[in-house]
Length: 54
Image (tube, rainbow, N blue to C red; front, side, top):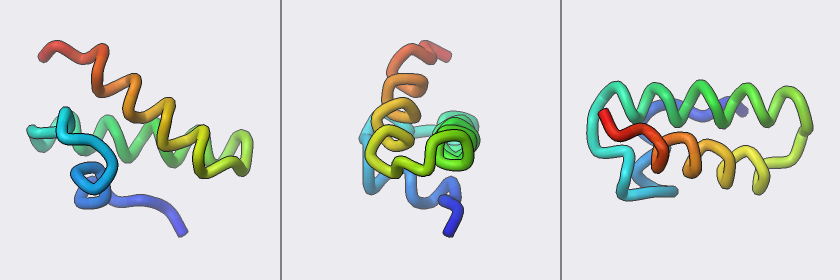
């Protein structure tokens, strides 16, 4: 089941804006589709949001 922007806050407090939540969703779903590894998808999405200073 794909993640939604609302799922982001359950995984990282850094996704504190709507755009960061959408970014988290996009990265997590892309990595999940590519690798099938949920843990990796969450870690990479968290890292992407962490790098986003906007």
